[in-house]
Length: 247
Image (tube, rainbow, N blue to C red; front, side, top):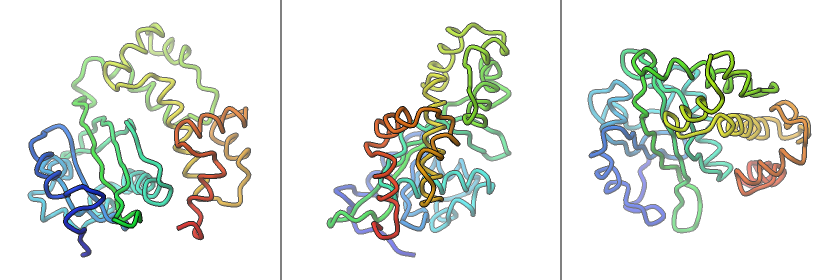
């Protein structure tokens, strides 16, 4: 297995790993370009149901997570490594030992060598401490979260979802901020843009307007503005960045 140099982009992986070993609610990891775990903290080991770091090092997401979740994490990795777009405060569902589900906020950023080439990524995943059946407020908004993440292509009305849950819109927004540190509209935007990036990578010949429509946008210009605000690139620039020639 390849290993990083003692520092990558000014980062000492071993020192950062030691720092994150002290945090019980944040999983830390460094991966190479192929998605193999090179550095991890103890929380990451526990999350994967392993006994020691040695059991996880060198493995990829497919080796330790159910395929649907692993494929989601791997798509994020390609976004960071191939597209240069960081993952920031991404709300997602994780599967913990014993198959208990829980929410976390994930961040990933590219790691570069001295020449500026991307050699891997570094990330964290903060447990929100809200297993499905235990948190008294989770059940009231879980259905709204899943509806947004699964049906972002549709004309999602947050007020209607609040009504279905028997909550006021202001109550839903307060619960989202308290529990997930996101508003419902931020989650909807995040879901649509993440899907758009994946489609741009997977279908390089598709029209940007068609991709925008598939992801729930009826206004191409609004899609382009939000995409650039989220990634610092236009959809066309992102496509060029992800092309094999660019790599």
